Length: 318
Ligand SMILES: [Zn+2]
Image 1 (tube, protein in one colour):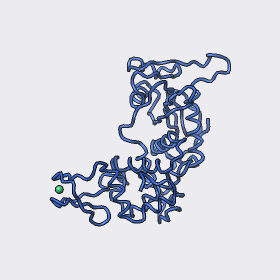
Image 2: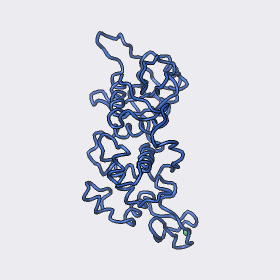
Image 3: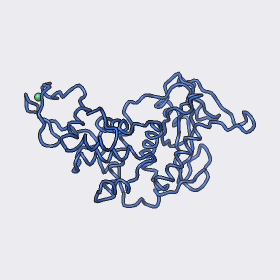
Image 4: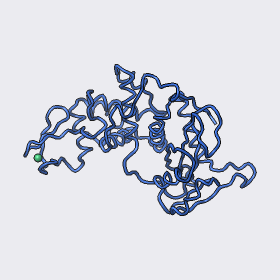
């Protein structure tokens, strides 16, 4: 088989059984070959559907331990199908859609699977943005207008960083929920997402005043630069696409508590929007799935049978 399947036909042919899925995961997880954690031997035999036993000391290792598939009671084939389907949804995946496509018995299961996959959309230790990066924040959700720098009832503050590739347009993006628009909240976001020494373009907000001392070359873009000029248009574009996506795919019914997961999915899709290789997205998500830490169900969800009123909000399209 190739490194990844290119279409549905190849996908079906590549993963006809649990063993095929396990062996594929094994190759992704141990690209340089199996190595026993106890004795270092490189020879192992598969036992059952997810276990390998060291040929020398008989130590058993599970290929799904420490991955998002850990503790699953469903076949790996089902997970593979879920990831194939999710990466193929241009506009994002909904729990209801996943439930239907896999024939899952409960919405709850589909919902938690989607959230586990969202956690795998962020690769641990991913590269930071470089070059010229535009940074701005915006309130998402809630019905009333909000004043900058203060908390707003029912709204979440989302900060976005967008690479400006000049003639080549928009590069990669990063997004996060921050508690407020203070320098104490915004500076760590920039430090986590943008390489030091890069140029960061912001407006004149004081929350960005510490970027210079943090090692960035800050450019302040002002509203009145010229008539009809809209400042920070790349950041505004990314934010408005996010709002449209939350309204469209998720009907605006996402909770504050889970918004960071939705941002991860949006960023994953946005940064790969021009990729024509669905199979590569599938492989990327699978690779991240075995790299990341497992997220216990009870940690990601407190209530899935319909959000409580205080968490439920409609997105104001601003
Ligand atoms: Zn061993």
